[in-house]
Amino acid sequence: MPGKIIIMLLIISGIKLYSQISPATPGLQAILFSKIFSYVRTLDPEDRINLLVVYTENISEANEIGKAFGSENFDVTISKLSEITENLKKTSIVYLVDTSGKTKLDSLFSLKNYLFISGVPELVEKGIASIGVGIEDDRPRIIINLNRLEDESHQVSSELLSLAKVIRQ
Image (cartoon, rainbow, N blue to C red; front, side, top):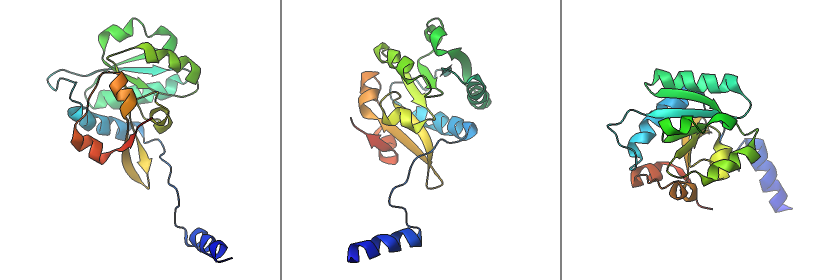
């Protein structure tokens, strides 16, 4: 009985027992990733970033993401997942837009030396992307999947790891 009372009090008082990370706006994602990339040791800070934005179904969201990253001075190419082969030659960073084609996204696991990022926290949590951003408790949150990052042959600084929610699968 005392346990039920405590649970009821927690629910009534509005204390969160579990907070979920939700997607951030495209503009905030672009700003955050522009800072995050300076902590990725395997990216040359002198190189201009060419970002490949890949979508499975939602081209309008891909266009929003592309516009936001373009306003942060990234070179952006937008491609449907089924057509990315040619565009991969121009980049080392791939932004994954949506999760509607999860089975199709599995084909990306064989690609090495590309840094897969996303504004969909679920993709990082499931190991499809290595670095993601989102919103948790009304604050920006960085999510890093270390196993995926290592599979991609990338490294990040300890400073970035200390700021991030780190997932090890």
